[in-house]
Length: 378
Image 1 (tube, rainbow, N blue to C red):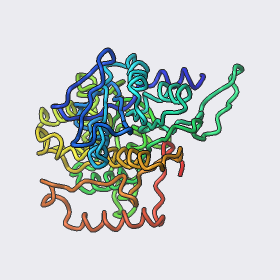
Image 2: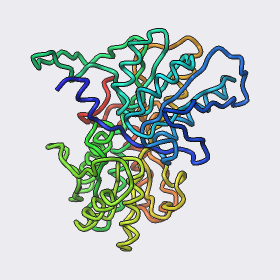
Image 3: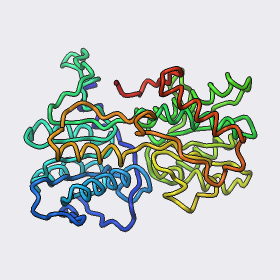
Image 4: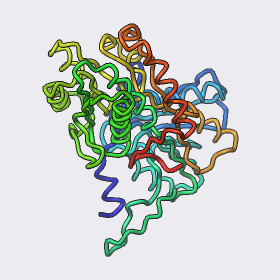
């Protein structure tokens, strides 16, 4: 399979966004905000969402927050345009090219092909993409022989990546510690690197808990060694996601980590319908904060600092510090982290917070190695 066909077939991770934002499709003009800045500034940062939209309470929302925060700090306008489907990606990027954007940030692995193509066609414009390495890994020649070298293949393109396996390791440890049944589960939207990296870290964290405590907490929904597990086929909340969650609950899992934007909403429905005290581990954002409708069952969340990563790249670009070296969020630089236990602080093991802090320090120092086949190269 060629790189183009491979990436064209992938659908990116859905995400959250503020419901009050004006949503725009590829046929409409991009939405711009002054953010209290100088409308005459020559620097215009822009953004395209994936088809999850800016109202998903997760990934896209965080990206837009990062764009708008940086624009406000810099005193400039920003423009953003929302995609309704994969067919919108290239047209939306081209709309922002025509709007004379200096930096175009695309949100999600599924925009990889469109971003790569646009960056090569517009060398005077800077591009950045969340959750894709902008490399030619997986590319083949006409005879099917590998040609990729894994390096960023566009000079004006910057990957914004996150080693979420590190934070998910902490989430898996916490889930195993909290579980009353000795079974925890995770499932995803699509089997793509930004999803499986969470699942790998989660399972490895459970494994570490078992090693440290002499326990045998089981993970259902994902097998690290075989890289096989439960996926819904997309990132929309609905029957598929609820069925996947119910299948894990039926295997006695009492902690679930759904990876894929809004699919957690359907998992929450399954948990509440079952009414046996099961809980959720959120991903991307601190879901306790972003979605009060499920705050009573959120044990914690594995956070990915999309907002911080986007803001850093926007500011560096404005200040003439743009390069194509990947930004990689880690526990050490605060790009990923485990959210507080919130309502569950009094319900978890009193020693858990201290254990998590100690494990994080060991991951940061390298004493504990957290690896995933999907981890970004550093």
